[in-house]
Amino acid sequence: MLEPKCDSRICAPFAWVNTRTGRFTANRTDAHQRVELEAMWQAVPMSDALWDQKIEDFYEHDYDEDNPAGAIAIIDRLVSERPPGDAAGLFELAAVRDSFGLEAEAIPLYRAALTAGLRGERANRVVIQLASSLRNVGQSTEAVRLLESLDDAGVDESARLAFLALAQFDEGRQGEALRTVLHALIPHLDGYGRALAEYADALPPGGCRASVGPFRSRQQRAIGGYPPTALCLCASLARRPTT
Image 1 (cartoon, rainbow, N blue to C red):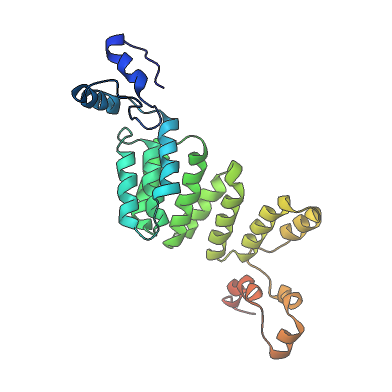
Image 2 (cartoon, rainbow, N blue to C red):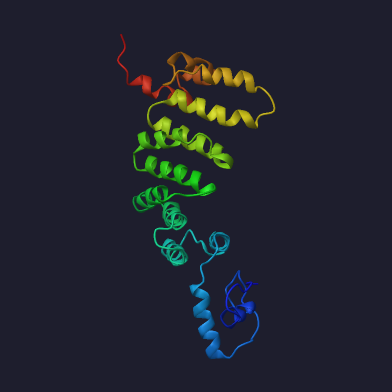
């Protein structure tokens, strides 16, 4: 319940307003006064926690991957409840568009949110999601720069490393991409961490043709084929002139 903190003639009626939904919980006023109070309630600044809950409710109940226009319309309406240029609002505008593959619309909104200044988990996620969108439109160099500039993404650190590996791969840095993935995986292993860390750090930046041999199975050796992973690791070397 909303605790009155102003003139009782104005605030007392709000004692019957539910702070989560903004609706009256009891029929304590006549219809005309209820309309006036509803308008006053809409003018009361919404707390960040209440608005964040609305965003969570949207993704839980109203987000429909088969109806992009409808989902975007709902988010646009929710963001309209925030002040103009609000960083969290800009982030949510970008995120829902990004989720539907609308990177061209999402990227400038992510950049605006980053400039406006985000707090908490969104501060890390805006970097990760912007980098992912940039990679999707062929700007993997900037994606790598953004993800490498983020020292530790907290609960999203594994996600940061995963997207960084993808961007490094697109940059032709396959050895670094594999190293990044291994270092993301090592903390989740019960053993072998030290050995894997050493092997990961020994990987060349672009992969190594000599490393293909151990990956080949007996059947693959017989038919002269290589597994896709080995081919990917050596893709950059295949383009280099030999001496």
